[in-house]
Length: 133
Image (cartoon, rainbow, N blue to C red; front, side):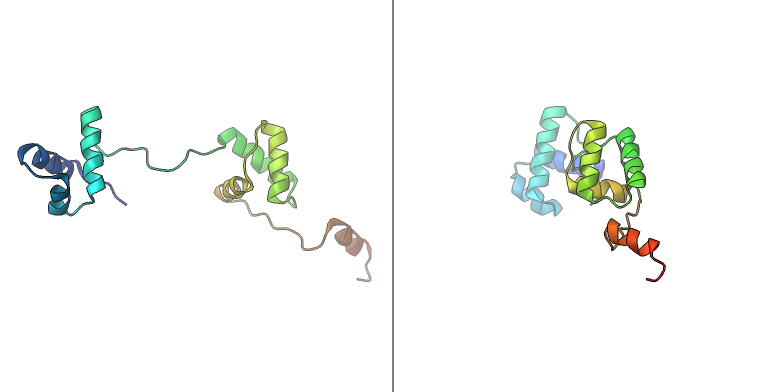
């Protein structure tokens, strides 16, 4: 969702300071959520600033650029490894553990495909060495 403009925010703030009106009435007048009015007023009280916050919600990435490169190298070297196996390999390289879901998201972020062979290694090896199959 796009942030409200500074002009719009200023109008809400001016209305709050000039009229004897409740925060709920201001929210209704400007067709915004009451929580937005409350957060805007709190932000203004604490910082004297009404600009939209630039740090959007969400958690910062668990792996930095260098660690992403290490993960990419591991995926390339162990293209048949599962996410869990990649997780342990990465732990050995960087010294801390991340979840399987994080490994999956980072691989997707790197735009790497990890196609698994449908046969276990032994069966693949036997099938390739036996020309009759």
